[in-house]
Length: 491
Ligand code: GLN
Image (cartoon, rainbow, N blue to C red; front, side, top):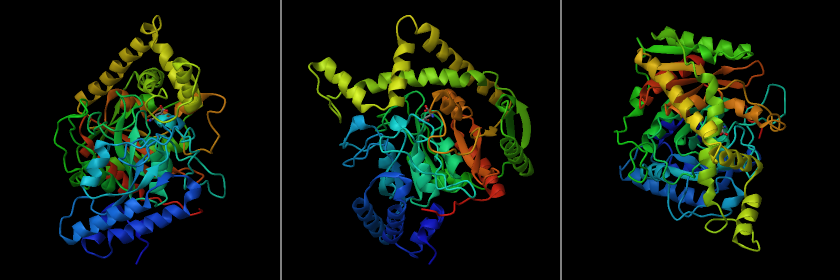
């Protein structure tokens, strides 16, 4: 039998249905792969007993013919999703050993559909970062290395554990979240597929909040088809999240292989950055050529406010974060550092519990929201946000079905290589992804090629609200043309 971990989710579904193997066998294969890959630090908590019991349950259901869409499929869960009875930390010391008494809506839907939980995945602390280096559990290794080099590279962030685990064949798919690029950028750095659906498509209930008007859950998977299967289970209206939208969830998988003939694809001229590496430029052209060969029409479009997206994001996101993180005071959750009075207890707990990047965001956020600065920063950023959204609306009003851009301005970099002296160097990673969150649109990152050093690169497709299906159809065209990429095992 081929190594069960190398199957795609769709192949595993068939193998399970045909009784070629059991969910317990599939789960055990992944648990042993996880054990051998601890050097990657992708999992912050392994839950083998729970995994085996869920797998046995799935096998029993399969035997009875009650096959849920993800029956018996082992997944990893980003540690930002509350899992009932299983430690959930957002990879922050301040949550300590917090064990939720409830399950996030997204994960409960995965379990409803029969999936198996292998454990909790590493991420940047409170999902703030682009390299998974701010986690209190330490950085995650990217399974990809530069050709001829032993340097460990970052998997991107904040969903670095999710991307690394999926790329290293430790789980068949993973949950992730994206506030400014945290699904798409790590997917691009690891040759995996990541989709951030439209804001409101997935419930945010039970997901540790970073910036509530930007946060969205989505899957990271090995193929566009696998991502479509996962999103179908994750999405849906939830009365517990008033921003979740009551629109029926389509069968996303049906969009895989659908013709893209006649679709209008926008190429935004503002994404052609000065000093952009030639190989990113080449990749972008290749992507456009593949879509054209599949019958799509390419048009140049303009998104004039693009250059303000990153600065506006880094006002809006920290502002919301500073407010969301006010709840971590040492009284109700996790860590408590005593003080002589309650104020000192708050101060000591927050100083000790939050890492440097989170503290920076809380300070920026508090500053931009404070009296006297609110109008100059926060209000202005919100106005810019409206203009960014309008840029996209104008473009879609001209009949554009989707927009093609690079996913990231570079391939993966080494641990500790970026952002040490200047945090903005790290923030620049999100240059192509934050606009999509600011506008609430769906975006997918699909592996598309490699750079000169053999590292994967991805392209991004941005869609109209609630038209994720278009992204799956187009993403599949790119996947078919580019082929699939798997890292050589060194761990
Ligand atoms: N890298 C961005 C940030 O640090 C986005 C993170 C995310 O999407 N969660 O804010």
